[in-house]
Image 1 (tube, rainbow, N blue to C red):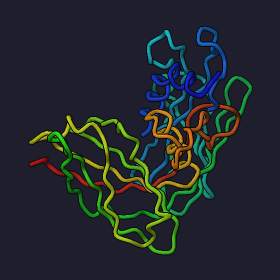
Image 2 (image 1 turned 120 degrees about the vertical axis):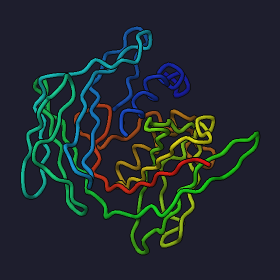
Image 3 (image 1 turned 60 degrees about the vertical axis):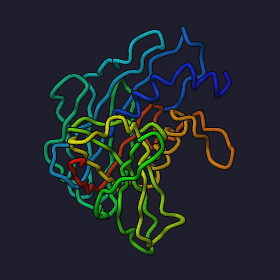
Length: 268
């Protein structure tokens, strides 16, 4: 199957997967015969818990994008102090009971399901403060939010931006929701977030959540955005067909330990 055929057939699934997470190996089989795969998404952050891990199964193209939840898994998250066994409080949704997110700590997710094990480890970066939100005017009366912050010098940082309009998550439409400071280490950053600006209207409440993420999570989100937006791999290279998950065992999704900073403004 060609890369373009894969993208056309699976773009509803890929978009839905990205929306789960503030989300692997892509199946290279015919559309009608594709086998469902396990999808695992979730995070631990520096905000008060509980934290959630979601487990579901992918669906065929002909079906709607309601991923069936997967119950009965044994899910644990551990750091150097404790191991927390998550509680399934609703189908496919597993919640922590004891663990607390702390920047600098390493967190390991372990999932046992149907005789198979899936594992991921993520280190929570130190938080970076989101200073303010400004706006950039584009053509045809479009307007885009801009995240302003000081990047710490001497540290390779990776960022994820999530927008909320009146409390509802806004999907980025051009893939500029992750940022790598490789070319701007230690500088004051003004990062434009290209999204569906039709949702940004006078009187609406806009929240930008800036997550400091680790390198593997950044790689996964960046590759997934390239696929779902068709933005390619940069310098004319094609978008990768297989986002590189940080979860072992051959599943879709990712696990992130990230620190959070956010700002909220009313659009004037």
